Image 1 (tube, rainbow, N blue to C red):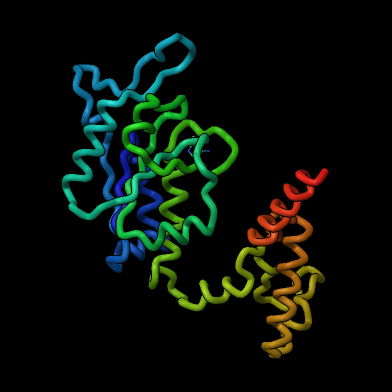
Image 2 (tube, rainbow, N blue to C red):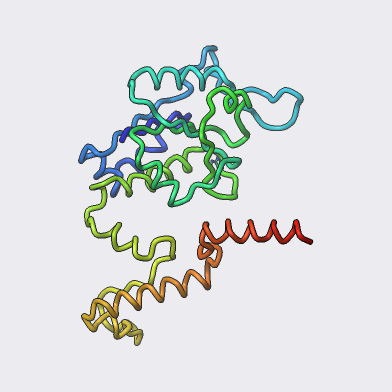
Length: 244
Ligand code: ADE
């Protein structure tokens, strides 16, 4: 996969690209990340990339021209078609299932900007997929872009050292992680649950699934609502509404 990042701060990505799974995926040739500085496409002597909003108000707005020119350059250097993604708190929530979808793509083009916002014509003309990593406002799209790179890279075939990790996770897919333990068996009087020491694989699997379900029900009951059920519920709700 090729991931292009259009950013004002390419240097911010150095750490994430050079550690752990992302670094290994790059070394194995599974992932190529190309950083392009939007400011290199500014036209004036001040290298401006933003300006005051029409109509007044606080903050600065990212201008169309540097982003359009930067994107045109990035798309021209490689004929591989990429999915355009704009990082913004106004976007669709980024989820694990979306990470899985993006991991199927051959190329992603991430556009990171300032949080104050983009000239609306960037949305209108470039028609990017707009993604938010959560309901909070960050100073820019760099950290969200790194989140997406990390979450997607883990899902590229061959990226995880232990290939079973993804499979292991899949039997509890959509649930929170079950409790994990490692040596020693007793630490400060706290014992590892007996079932994990039993060597009985079926029992261990059952225990983990039950723990994952219980933990999810307690901490994130919203994750337990099946999308198909919720659709049915909505339909029956609206039928109910119509009748009443
Ligand atoms: N830019 C600023 N805040 C953001 C967020 N929460 N998600 C994506 N992009 C952002």
